[in-house]
Length: 277
Image 1 (tube, rainbow, N blue to C red):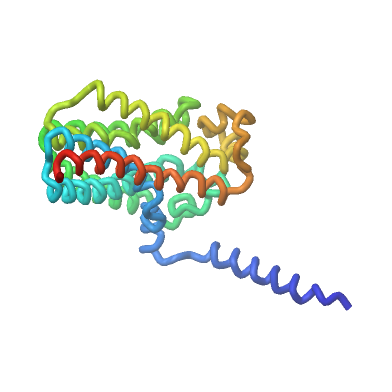
Image 2: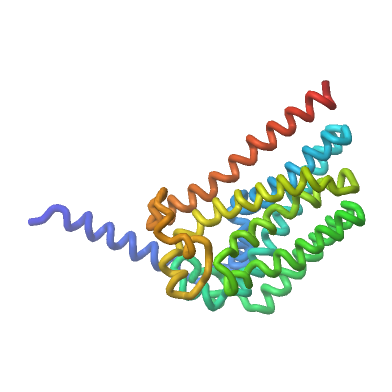
């Protein structure tokens, strides 16, 4: 008698139970939470936050901003980054709901599964927009105007670029780095074009790098669904990861959040030498 049969049956039962749990209809509130991706915090949100944090640190250094004010500003921009990331995810899923059904990783998203209606998603999106605008209103007139361009044009256009160009990650880079000039202006009141434009370009390149890695986990499905991306564009030229392993792609994407600590730490160290000592 084969003694491995009970173990095999147990393993099969576990897989069936796991599949059934995934297919079960979750509570409505949980579907809305998953729509915002806030359950995955800090992934995603932290990548929106870092450019804002860098802009604040550099601007604080340039004007000698008190440490207490800098800390308050950092917290405010972190909250704003989470809200903005949530809003972007909601809008992305609203635009991509039909495509999401064709991609294995995204077919379980709340709108694609029919767990959240377009009306419900629109209401949640509107709430996030109101909160974002409210926070921007405290940043000063110039910073608010720049922030509104990012919120209602740059972010809104991103999902649509996946239909028009093989470089949506470049547009995403603009969106993810948009907090840099907003944060700088909120403290300084004016733009330092040489400094900010250089950092802005670096932020775009960084985003293209990490989001191309992230997009590789959907490469085969994206090709079938007609979704355009740098992962599809570069294709077999990307050979440094096992792109068939979704967890590896996710781990590399998530690791970029740790890099932000290093960059911000250097900036705050320089700030401390000038302002606090």
